[in-house]
Length: 148
Ligand code: RB5
Image 1 (tube, rainbow, N blue to C red):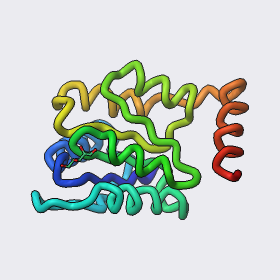
Image 2: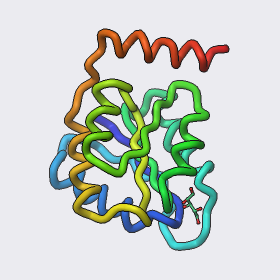
Image 3: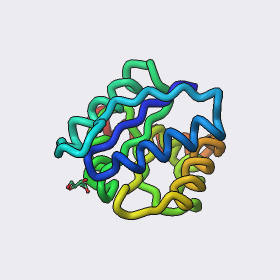
Image 4: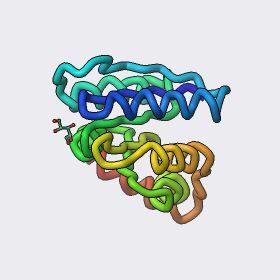
């Protein structure tokens, strides 16, 4: 699997942590890091756009977007057609957003969660499959909303 990750200045440390977690636990996942790479202030919608473009154009199957709270960047990501971004601060949500919502992008807040929860969330999100069935009907309705 190819996965694109990006963060604003509020979550650069978390981005490095998540990359390390993935490299150690999921060596088959190729991670594409679109930045940011320092502590200079950047605008989270620009990062959301860069990450989500990789999914929309088919180069990545999944994305992880990070900002201080995870809120702004998840709002921005969900404006992009084809993106279902879930802001998760707990493992239950990380599992359910895969099983029920087929979330293709995970958002987390670098100023909200620590390394331990982030690791469990990422592991759950990467290993949980979409259940389909009645949930596919609901995803289709989301897609219909996007196409209005
Ligand atoms: C940047 O200071 C901060 O606003 C951003 O990281 C994020 O928390 C926005 O939702």
